[in-house]
Amino acid sequence: MGNVPSAVKHCLSYQQLLREHLWIGDSVAGALDPAQMADHTEVMKGIHQYPGVRYPVLTPNLQGFHRAVAAGATEISVFGAASESFSKKNINCSIEESMEKFEEVVKSARHMNIPARGYVSCTLGCPYEGNITPQKVTEVSKRLYGMGCYEISLGDTIGVGTPGSMKRMLESVMKEVPPSALAVHCHDTYGQALANILTALQMGINVVDSAVSGLGGCPYAKGASGNVATEDLIYMLNGLGLNTGVNIYKVMEAGDFICKAVNKTTNSKVAQASFNA
Amino acid sequence: MGNVPSAVKHCLSYQQLLREHLWIGDSVAGALDPAQETSQLSGLPEYVKIVEVGPRDGLQNEKVIVPTDIKIEFINQLSQTGLSVIEVTSFVSSRWVPQMADHTEVMKGIHQYPGVRYPVLTPNLQGFHRAVAAGATEISVFGAASESFSKKNINCSIEESMEKFEEVVKSARHMNIPARGYVSCTLGCPYEGNITPQKVTEVSKRLYGMGCYEISLGDTIGVGTPGSMKRMLESVMKEVPPSALAVHCHDTYGQALANILTALQVTGEVRYSSTVHSRTGKSR
Image 1: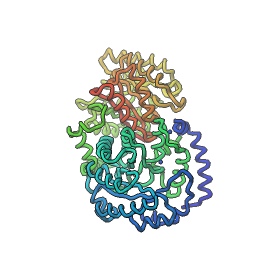
Image 2: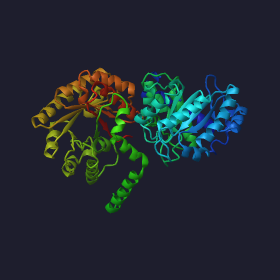
Image 3: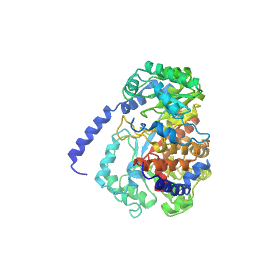
């Protein structure tokens, strides 16, 4: 992962640079490969768990769940899909089979008072099936919510959604799952993420998934972008006067750190604008 | 640009590639499907006019000087996309904007397709006359909501620029040439920082009052967010009707589409059937 001490030093001067950048300051004055994850136990055991911060981990099955708990995890997630093809290709089983596995995991988690979060992939489109009906998304979300997931994160996995399809999907899901138990997870592959998130916020959703620096490209579209950048999201929310409690400078610092470590340029436009300022 | 036949061949295969791309196809189908209408977002206009500014605002900021024949080919291709307004060039001194030095040749060289409008920037009377001589049938004037930006960008105060624009717009109107007004820095200025909605309103009102048929409100450095966009538009709409407004959002901080969506919703709510004009340019 590179030289940690010099990376830390670099981060300090980068933060200084950011504080002097007018528009970031204003933004604050105004409101989160199998090979990559192979070290899951070491990472979980190695991180410092800060008070007030939750550290969920993905646990696809009971085995993963038990390992996670043994490594110190206090919150878990299960990852379903609204598309049969995607479910089979991604986790090697049908939606129904995956739900049965998740029932076991979530049940065990609840017995141990460990909160479980449910993800639904492909809510606005699937790389194999194309369009996905809001009814299917609702069915899967309802199932996950019913088995005890405290929150359902609705993912636009390949970023093909637009404010229109986001609205239709949410209207359907909200008939079965209350907005307070919903989150959106928008990929920015087609540049639509912030507009889609804004739409979700206007409909009463107030939990949004994002990735620092917009890490994670799209495995279904070579060279395309992936997750919406946390920095860009915070910039928008700050401008709306919405409180996130998150320090955008520190996020950008972490983003700079990880981009240097993986040797790639940031996908965050806010970070790019700050660098070029 | 190399061997034209192979470039054309490349373009043909690229177009083919796009047609086969599922999600682009779906995007097209969605816009044409009347059944979509009822479940779209509320408070949106029925129709959105896109003003393409790539050939002017886009190229102006590219370091590489683009040859005249390439600019002409670029604009001709855009003319065949269904876009109804394409901003061609700027009749400004080549000393200030070298990229636009070939303004006369480009204006004369493009094919003016029926049903497409080709506005050009004309900062003063001299530029205006040159533009008309070169075949321009629509012009734009470019003001700012920031004194510092006005001085640094066009070398005069806001008041001085308005006086120049009055002359241009008056001449344009005498010749039945429509004039569009731009206001830069409506959501922030690189020199002054925050800009008040009141200042934007003042400048917009002035341009509208002198006869500009439309005022394009620019987030010149892309620092705006849906919150600041809403506040600014609410202020401007007290003096200029939404049907005479457009937004010009830069994507420097990745906020452009969210800001545009907000603009569509804010202006759409006031007059549902009004046409909201939005501009897109080259995002950086």
